[in-house]
Picture: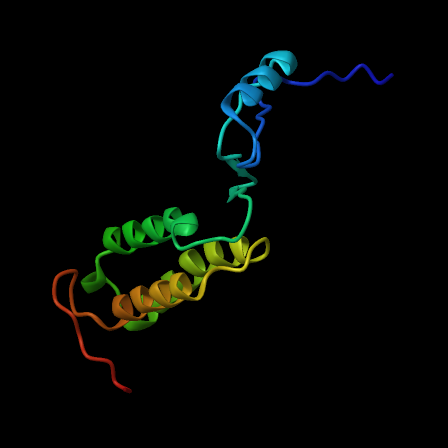
Length: 132
């Protein structure tokens, strides 16, 4: 009634593991929609089925590590490094954690990367934290 139509280029079908390859092809051909194992992203967050694993959030880990490698630790004071982590890295995590529960291993790894960025002397040399 409203005149809105389905955009078939943006639509994706996904099936359970119980569906055979022939069934997937028939349904995709009838509906004229492609099928995929992954649903992609929505509003910057990965859309997945089932329980998340460490590989599900690998993209967040790689984004965080590349950002930290890009910032040269020797150019900032400890306060500047802390502000960079709070404004950039933690905001990406906060957005994702509004939708999903991040696995414990992933959050611990990102915390470790942030901590090393604050305390290291340069990109190659690790520093010692003031408190154990």
